[in-house]
Length: 102
Image 1 (cartoon, helix red, strand yellow):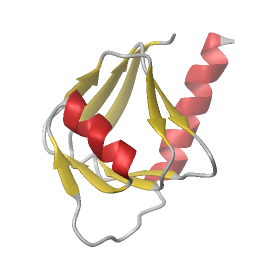
Image 2 (tube, helix red, strand yellow; image 1 turned 90 degrees about the vertical axis):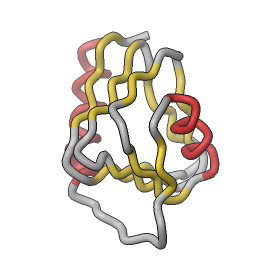
Image 3 (cartoon, rainbow, N blue to C red; image 1 turned 90 degrees about the horizontal axis):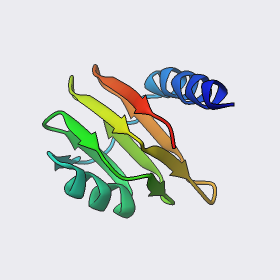
Image 4 (cartoon, rainbow, N blue to C red; image 1 turned 30 degrees about the horizontal axis):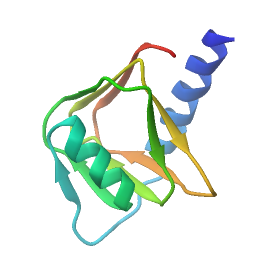
């Protein structure tokens, strides 16, 4: 079951990387706190540093365009929870690494 979750998230991430959306100006984030705040607001979010999350769930309930900007987002015991019809689109060169599942 845990392997299926990892595979599903990996496939979702790969598919999402091809869905590039143009926005006005992205909100730059450089740590977990600013990432969480930006994701909660929705809109365009751009990583300016590599970020490692350390909490269980990152809830997204508004549409978000996440630009990895060549950076790495490491989910350590974390997962994205995309709720209520919201969409998470991941683009830009970079990586999402899943270290452990919850």
